[in-house]
Length: 124
Image 1 (cartoon, one colour):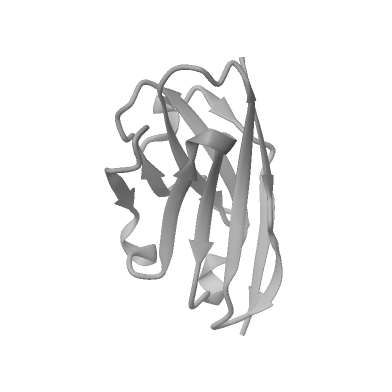
Image 2: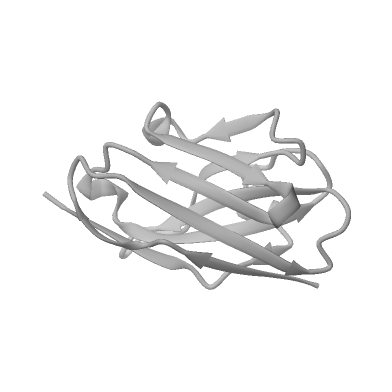
C-alpha cells in the first residue's frame, strides 16, 4: 500500500501562484508514475498533469500547459505541482495519484493510489 498526502492548497487571486506537494509513504520502493487530477465543483475529476518515474516524461492537460509544472523528488518521495498564472477556472480539489509502473497515465482508472485532495480556490 502507498499513502499519499497532499498539501499546499488555498485561496488566491487570479494571476497568483501556488505550489502543491504530495508526500508518499508506505511501500514506495519500486517505480511509480505520479499525477495530479482535479475536480471542479459539479464536474467529474479530470487529468491535470503526470510524470513518469524518472521525471523525464511529462504530460499536461491542454488548459494548464505553460502554466503548471509537475516535478518529483524521489529521494523525498514527493511530487510537486507548481501552478502559475492561476485562473478562476482552476478552482478545484486537486488529487495526487500514484500508478505502479514507470509509464505516464492520463486516465483515472490507470492509477492505483489516491490522496484525499487539497482545495484550490482562485478568485477573479
